[in-house]
Amino acid sequence: MRNLVFLFSVILFVSCNSSEEKEIVKNDEEFVFDMYEPSEMTHLMLSMYDFNEKIKKEIIAGNTPDKFPKEFLDIFTAELTDNKPYNDIFKAYSKVYIDNERAIFDGTSEIPIKQRYNNAINTCISCHSTECVGPISRIEKLLIK
Image (cartoon, rainbow, N blue to C red):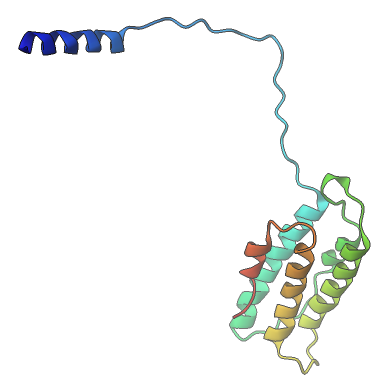
């Protein structure tokens, strides 16, 4: 019985270690990677996110941001992903977002700064719920609790 187990083990070991040379097939065609290139709108929204993340920290620290970023106005002209056309819903949400974002910097407003800030972020969430839902969970992290 021992001999049988020993013989089986040797056969298994040899079969697992046998090396077969594999033929490598080369293709003369050049492979071109299809790399994702973010649209102007994607770049803009990423910078909006970063900016709002910074002012969230300022607001939590008790400071009031003082300068509305003019580049946010590019939301009306930036090229959308896949060259999609602007639709009426996006245009309407964009206007509301810009109004809400400007309100954050209004030092004369009687609405608490946290509420004004959250109004702007909630506008982003509402707009994204109609079209591009992917970043919603990330945008929700911008809200001040």
